[in-house]
Image (cartoon, rainbow, N blue to C red; front, side, top):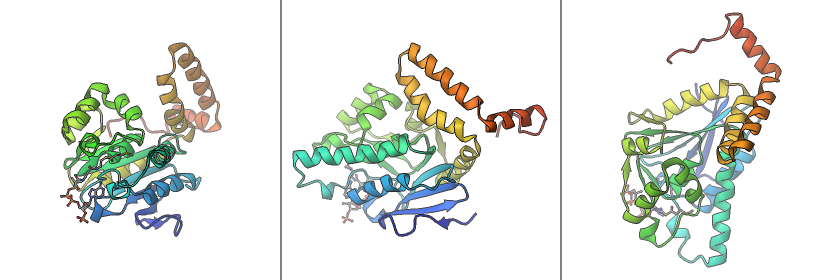
Length: 266
Ligand code: 1HE
């Protein structure tokens, strides 16, 4: 399917967006600087999620060039004072919160460098597809800074504090396979196929019941962080809300009538 334009004229040129049916694709489009994230890009990401049309069911985040993202634009950092540093980090938090707890599930298509703030961006998405060329690093220690885009909250949940500390302290890189086994991505695919795979997954996700997608991105992470007593109650409430929708009743009846897909190995 050929992409159609989306949100034309409202985003910076470094953030390109297009629609593939019910899937919106956001492309980090600054390949000459390895998609290093300037303020305009971070604000553009936040605006994209705020203005996503209601008929979009899933988002893919991808990148131009050989690298997903080299992290924070270090050229914008050199004369930032403490207070503006705090505000800057909170801006990243807002933008990435709009991804993690936004309106629809988000799939990232990773390749090449997924570094620093680029890894923080990836970790705010729900499904990560990594091409074999992908490598991950957190070189903040070498730059004299700390993660500021939510990485210290999200990454330990994916890979554990010990792995994150190792990445930050030693400057170690994980390749795509190491990232897969550590939990940084859920898929590893051949080079050049990441966007296609991400679009296929996003298309499937967009075909799910919206109330189930809502439950997975809004309720599941909160239940996982809650105590078991609160978690069980939240689960019961979310289950009742989902199954009470007309859409759920229709989908279950379609299966009982033999008109819905069985569970198969796709
Ligand atoms: C940049 C950036 C950047 C590249 N900010 N300009 N991130 C880092 O410490 C990663 C730094 N980047 C690299 O290690 C390498 O650039 C890569 C491994 C990603 C790619 O290497 P390569 O050989 O393909 O490209 P290059 O020649 O190093 O870079 C191409 C250009 O992009 C070059 O500019 P040019 O004008 O000389 O062509 C680089 O300066 C520029 N460039 N990365 C600015 N990051 C919310 S807190 C988050 C904290 C962090 O993200 S810390 C991690 C920062």
